[in-house]
Image (cartoon, rainbow, N blue to C red; front, side, top):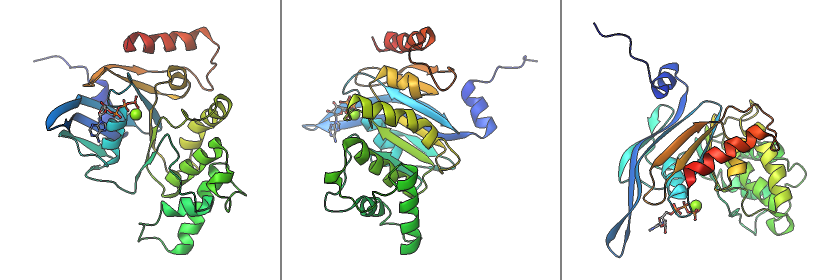
Length: 267
Ligand SMILES: Nc1ncnc2c1ncn2[C@@H]1O[C@H](COP(=O)(O)OP(=O)(O)OP(=O)(O)O)[C@@H](O)[C@H]1O
Ligand SMILES: [Mg+2]
């Protein structure tokens, strides 16, 4: 009889019932002048409960495309994405996405922008929507700014409205596409410091966060797991579990060793 086979980490995660997101052998081709443009080849990853997974890779390799596939906005050419118990076949209420460039409606107040994200929710009354929007703004640190218009908000505050809008619908999965990259350094640093505690907290419904970023220090500051993609067509060249204790000391030798590890996979 054969001896006991060691279970792969993935099999252990599945057996423990903690997998929130599964990307399973995903391929994607766009089409350019009728020629197929392969963007993702055989990409697989998982995010388990309470995990922040960062995806990085060279510019233009397909990171945003992968995030859009996970959100259901783009359909893969082949392969599947599962969130909790079901396959993602289109945008859904339990998956939220925050983009780099705020995408707020300038003629609506902060509260109305957050409410706009709930407009398709037929299961909620107007009063429930209002309550959820107000509470999401509060969690995102914008209490008192409900009736302010985006034009009067700083970049960091606009991004907080984006986060509040994504949180208001009580998503299980939060997808972040370079959410700090258009902010000034100090604002980005502050928001980043809050982000892990804010998202992975019992205060919100979020179970897993997937962050796309090309900023390696940001990734080591925030991520529990890092997925490194190759240049286009992207495949996974490395998967690292970052076991540094939190809060992470960005000046420690260990921190820089982790940063180096990611850089060596990128080069
Ligand atoms: N809708 C589309 N139709 C055709 N090609 C596209 C489309 N969206 C993206 N692409 C191409 O697919 C490739 C991957 O784009 P994507 O935006 O996913 O990369 P990225 O890694 O997010 O890039 P960046 O680092 O600039 O954010 C690029 O070559 C891009 O030009
Ligand atoms: Mg991108």
